[in-house]
Image (cartoon, rainbow, N blue to C red; front, side):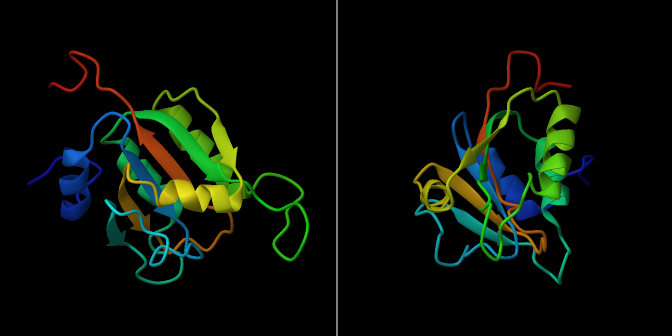
Length: 153
């Protein structure tokens, strides 16, 4: 029996093969993950029903298992039908969860189509399809380094 926050066997298998610089995409329910999948990425579908599993829950589980070096989010539109006047509310959840594990970096904003390109890059090892209903709730994580003595119990 596993003793931790991350229990999903397929996700654990992929994370075990990741190394420094590998990327993991947590995609919201609107992300075209079926057509924007990287050539080396495994797709894990956690989109059971609307809102279950959401993006912050997936992020929290991943943060319990891997160090993070960088984070990228899809820059939101400021006009049009999906435009926002300020950061999407889900980003506050991302920032809080990242801060809880000591991550001090920023959420680096990337233009939508450039973000899609990043999500399809060869260094993306895992794409997690969530049932997140919030818009602009995609986050791309870059795996960091486990320093000597950090990974042992």
